[in-house]
Structure formats: structure tokens, C-alpha cells
Image (tube, rainbow, N blue to C red; front, side, top):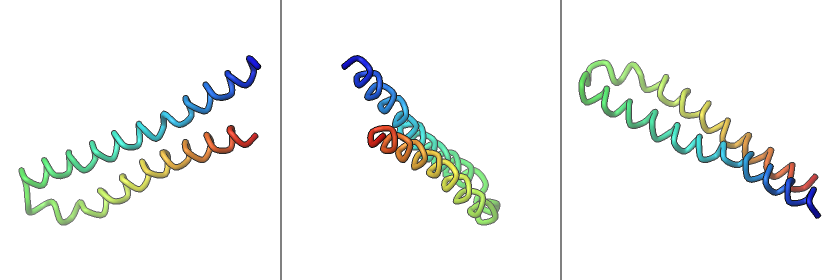
Length: 74
């Protein structure tokens, strides 16, 4: 019974990466918006970097979710 409780504790810790991904995406878009308001002429050239950064952060969140599911199934 104790081993199962540690299993669920580990799954909860693994899914905390999803919380970090949500904070990271909010930070990326918020900082982009602040920079775009300061210098609107440079904003258009940075949109590609914005979406690449957001995609990488989301990939880490999805990875944390998948690892949590795999730990739950295993």
C-alpha cells in the first residue's frame, strides 16, 4: 500500500511541469506584448521567435503530462 501512495505522489510531481508550462507561455506572450508596445516596428520580425518559444514550452508541458500518464498506467 505504501508503494502505491509514493506512485501517486510521483505522478503529481510529474504533472507539475504542466503548471510550469502554463506560467512559461503566459510569460512569453506577456513579455512579447510589452516589447511590442515599446517598439511596434520590431514586433513583426519577432513573431516567429514568439511561436517557436511557445511551442517549445508547450512541448515540455505535454511531455510532463505524458510521463504522468505513463507512470499511472505502469
